[in-house]
Amino acid sequence: MSQPTAYPEWFFDRDDPTPDGDFYDVPRLVTHIDAGAIAAVGGLYTELGVDAPQQRVLDLMSSWVSHLRRPPGELVVVGMNAAELDANPLATDRVVRDLNVDPRLPFPDASFDAALCCVSVDYLVRPIEVLAETARVLRPGGTVVITFSNRCFPTKAIHGWLATDDPAHTAIVADYLRRAGGFDEPQTSRRTPDPAYYRGDPLYAVVARRS
Image (cartoon, rainbow, N blue to C red):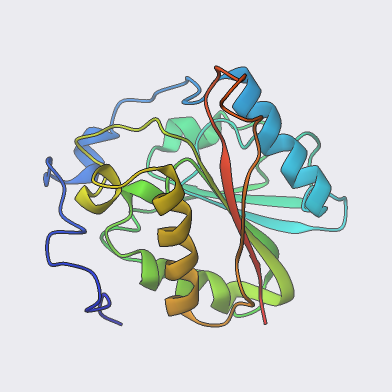
């Protein structure tokens, strides 16, 4: 599957085109959003039931923490750095994979109840393909939860993300899901309080169900 022609040619370019494996070679055992945004992620996961004991969950572009308030039945983490994945205390299986090089997911069809992607969708240069694969590995009715803030590694984020604001980001991610196919209409929301009186990192979510 090729990227959609509706996006400009420059949209998926990045300031740093060098291999991501080099950039992520050194473990970063830090969090990339503040405590309020982390709490909002965990609260959303609990609200959606993806951290229930019977759930088999896939965490895409994962790291040493998955922000789940309680461990699901199984948690398979896919990420760039083996040391970070090994440090994830909730993970039951770990896969090192660069989805920008190969967006295929090494799992059978309909093998997960939920798929998560937290503060990482802005780094994908082939997001439609990755989300089409996500639809393939989700069971019917399964949930995909994509969350993001306004923080990133700017040299690795795609130009289309850097050139747009937060409301546009939610629209972009929802469009990715529609173009990937296999999902019901995505639902978008801001999970942190109104910025008029909230000064922490904002947290946005796009959620869809496998159709």
